[in-house]
Amino acid sequence: MLIISLIFYTFGEGILVLLIIASTLIDFYAGKIIEKGFRKQGLRLSIFANLSFLVYFKYAAFAFENYYSFLELIGVSNLDWQNIPNIVLPLGISFYTFQTMSYTIDVYRGNVKANSNLINFATYVTLFPQLIAGPIVRYKDIHRQLIDRKQNTKQFSEGVERFIIGLAKKMIIANNLAYVADSIIDIPNSDLHSSAAWIGILAYSFQIYYDFSGYSDMAIGLGKMFGFEFLENFNYPYIAKSIRDFWRRWHISLSTWFRDYLYISLGGNRKGNKRTYINLIIVFFITGLWHGASWNFIVWGLFHGFFLIIERLGFAKILAKTPKIISHIYTLFIVVIAWVFFRLETLTDALNYIKSMFSFNKHPKVDFLSHYLTKEVIMAFVLAILFSFPIYKTITNKLNNNVYLSIKTLFLLLLFVLSTMYIAIDSYNPFIYFRF
Image (cartoon, rainbow, N blue to C red; front, top):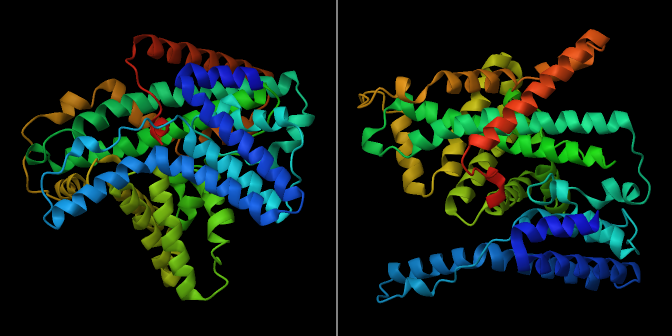
């Protein structure tokens, strides 16, 4: 598994495989240092090394750009913007650095014992099913599986089913909606009608969900095929009734990571309301920054953090008393508006797009309904809405007779063939979270 995972990563990243090997070795020996009694030294080594890698490869160029912008703001001229370094972002660096840091923090806290087998630990770090885009797998959740895991036909077939569903989410739903989202979002603001703007951002909202949850499904499915049980990463986030509920359902491995290793370390909600709100702002500032070196991501994170604070201030009690449909609409409205900042490149572009969403007096210059909303796209929208609810899960839990299993098998085979056809005819379209 270790050799396969290293070959897999090298195929995509070449020489940058040395970075993940270095991170693995540092954290392996940091764990041993902690175990020997030098707890703070081992933890500091791990955190410093991992954050150094992450800051350099992901944020150095962003820091230089903002430094140059500041110099221009104060009147410094003749700046050579070509001096800003062009640094390649290694695939999966945000995920595997968080995985290895969770390991050393858990060893430091006494939650797990340091691994004494380098091959087992390196397999955990580089495990190819979820290496590139998560879910973020914690060592304490699978350390026993690295030594002794059971593999059987039932588990393997469940893995195949989960993989096919994830592949179909990506190829049939996410990619079709990506066409609409990209086409509309690229329309100049002066030509963008509010109805088109709403359709564009709704398409993106479904695209990012089915793209990312599709990858997670594929990773979890592949893990099952090899005997690993990864924790769920999504739990139908678009049925959430509050922003707090949304973050319990969206990218669960990341939100729980920040809760357990950052929010609680900052004091959580144990030091009074004021400190709790400050901690939430810090966590969601870093959540936004984790997604990318851009002010738009930071605003996206703080936007969610702001409404979490509003709910903590008492709005959650009001939501609890309102009809579920109202709280659901409120949550979706906030989430969709936030996706504008996530998707657009600059703050100016995002604000202009939001302005277009609410400029109902503007007349469309093109018949976008017939141009963008093809039968295929409409079907993708219908499927996206339908499977935002736990319909498939409900059906599979209630029906277990042989006739149903035969129909399900044929359905999965059809999905696999259809997804493969899309792969064959589609242009290169990587998963959205590869960029993070």
